Image 1 (cartoon, rainbow, N blue to C red):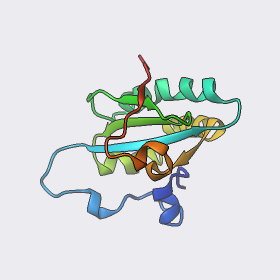
Image 2: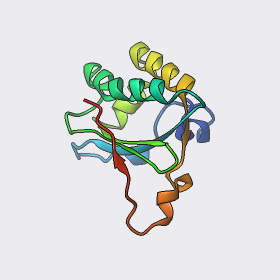
Image 3: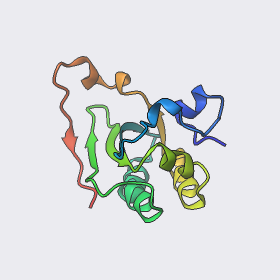
Length: 134
């Protein structure tokens, strides 16, 4: 079962991340940038789930302690930058009940969009408004 992200959809719902993400012998995390467009009337619900997102991932041993950043696009889309512990952690997340519950909350509050759909993506130096999540 996939989470509904573009990566899972591109693999036909297969939740195993591509092997290209795992670098043999390299012990570093996997930085990701994700954009969440709030559904109509769900701005507050989305912000609430984003605020607990990385905390839940860390509690499950899936995200690093590197600080996460959340920003708001001109069109209201929230952009989050965080670090998975590894490609294996991403795969484990797709089978983790706590994470799957969290992703259901995301599904109810937003749609995932590619960064290229954001107005800022057309700018040489994309700038966003900081969103406090702690």
